[in-house]
Length: 177
Image (tube, rainbow, N blue to C red):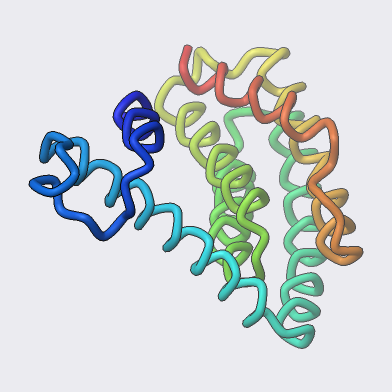
């Protein structure tokens, strides 16, 4: 599809022209319309989210995030001491699930995706206990350690923590194994 878009741009055909007038194959014309439409809707949806997030909702989310992070820290300590502790495991997964669901409502999509994958990792640990290795536990602890920095980034309207991408990639590799 990118090649088709480049071909379309190279022809400099006005976007409203149907393929019969422009000489473009029908599929190229349709792909270019789809590409432009999807880019337009992503920009529109993103702008709408940023405009609609009010400070009251963000403050409520950040207060809830603080409580959830305390619960996650407590559960992590219990789970590290005993990886077969089902209640601690559920508490971790529930905390990630809650953040995953509410973060996008305040424009924190990266945090939501990050927690979605932490929840997936916990599901992997439940389904395949052999994946619970010291390295996996350490990676989970590092990922959890970055959650407060996500909150501070959101509070200060800054980008996500610098290390988040690298730790997130390690989490994804653990899930894929």
